Length: 590
Image (tube, rainbow, N blue to C red; front, side, top):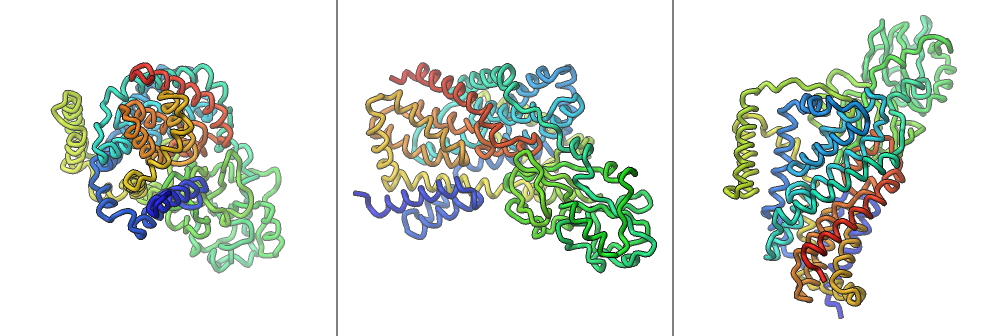
C-alpha cells in the first residue's frame, strides 16, 4: 500500500511531467508549482527546500554562467574566431575546425553563452561563403552538447547530478568518469556529423536573402500625396497605429529612414510610409480616400534598401508567450517587427496578434538605441554579426587572463577545488572592474536557479518518502531477467526519452532517485549507473525543445521540427551504443 506522502509525491511528479511536456507554462514555473504542492502538504520541509540554494553544485553553476558572461563582455571573441578559421576554405573544413573548437571550449564554460557567441559568426561565415546556415548551426549546437560531457563543469546537468550525490552522501563522480567517455563520444559525434549528418541537414535559404529577393511580399510602400488629409497630423492622430492586418514600420523622408516610428511623429507631404503584416489589407487603407498613394509597379522599391536585423527569441526571454501588441515591443527595444518565422516558415496575418514563442526568428528594422536596450533587457539574441572593439579596461583584462591561467593550473593540480577556483575568478572580475552589479543583475538566470533548486527538492522528496523505491521496485520487476546490463540500459533510455522532451535537469531529477533506490536495494556500486544518467541526459539531439542550444539555432537555421529528428535519431543511437559499451566494459557491469 502507498502511504499518503508517497501518493502526493507520485501525483506531483506525474503532473510535473505533463506540465513540462505540454509547454503551457515555463519550466521554472512548473517546478515551483510542484515544490509548492509538496511544501503545503508538508511532504517537503522548508529547510530541505532552502538547502538547495546553499548546495555547492548549484552555486558552481551560477558562477560558471557569470564568469562566461564576463569573458563574453570583455574580450573580442570574433577576432579569435577569425584567426582560428582563416584556413577554412570549404564548408567541411570550417565545420570540422568549428566543432573541435566549440567542443573543447564547451568542456569548461557554459554551453548557452558559447552558442550565443558563435551563432552570429557561424551564420555570417555561411553567408559570406555561400553555404546555407542550416548546414552549420545544428552541428554548432550538437558540438557544445558533446563537448560539455568531457568535464564535470561542461554542462549544468553534470553538476545537478553531483548535487544529488552530495545531498545523499554518495561519493562524487571524478573528472576521469567524464573525461575518457566524453572525449570518445565527442570524437564519434563529430565524425558522424562530418561524413553522414552533413548530408541529412537541409540546405535552407537564409531568411534575410529571401527577404531581399521578395521584399514586396513582406512590405508595402505608400506615399503621402500633396492633397492628403494626413499632412500635419501625428501618426496617432492619423489612426495609423491600430490598423487592421498591417502596421506602420518605417517612414522614409528625404532619403532618411525614421525607424521605429513614434506615435507622435508628424506626417509630411511626400513621406513614404512602409507597412508590414497582411500586405493585401493595404488596398483598403489606400481606398479610404485619405491621400495615400501606391507606388508604380515597376518603380524602385525602398523596402529593398532597408537595414534588416535578424534576432531570435531565446529561452527565458520575457517576450516568450506574449502577443506582440501586448509586449510594447517598439518602445522597449526601439525596433519594429517586419516578419516572424517559425518552424522554417513565415507566419502570416497581423503581426500584432501573433504570440511570440521561444525559437522564433524575427526580422526587424531598428533605431539607434536598439542594441543598448536589448543588451539591458536580454530579450533577444541578435544573429547579425556585430564587431566588438577592445574593451576600455584593456590592462585589467590581461591581468584577469593571467589570473585565470594560474587558477586553472591550481585546479588541475589539486591545490584548489573547482568551487574555490571559480569563486576566485568571479571575485577577480569584480575587483578588476570587468563585471559590475548591473552585469550580475542582467546575467543572473533566475529561471535556471529555480529549476535547479526545485529539481533537487523534488528528487530528494522522492527518495525520503519512499516514492522512488516504489518506482524502482516496479522497474526492477521488468528488468530483473536482463541483469545489471538490462538495468543500465533501461535507466539510460528512460533518461534519453525524458530529456528529448523536457529539460535535462528535470530528467536527472526524475531518474536519479530511481537509480539511487535500485542501487541501494540491490547493493550495487552506483557509479556506472549515475554516469549513464549523466550522459543520457545530454543526448537531447532529436528535438529542438530538448536542449536550449537547439532552440537557439532553430530560427536562424530555418529548421523544421523534423530536421532535428532526421539527424538526431541516428546520432542518438550511435551515441547511446558508444556510452553503454564503454560503461559496461570499463566498470565491469555484468
